[in-house]
Image 1 (cartoon, one colour):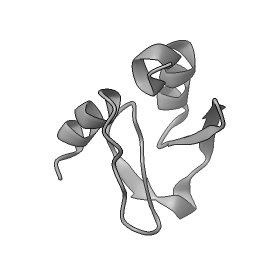
Image 2: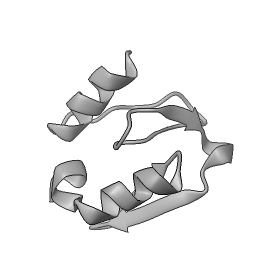
Image 3: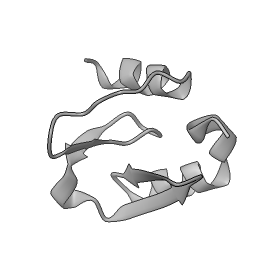
Length: 69
């Protein structure tokens, strides 16, 4: 599925399942190997992983937009 579409669907509440060993960044829509997961935030018990520090900062600064708080 196209990464931008996945990002939009995730933001409106659809659960997106990544392939095994692959994570989905809710900020930029990028899929990346779980082995590359250096950036993580936990919100309401859910873990979110990011491809970059920049995406993590965007997420942390606007939880409602990205996590549907």
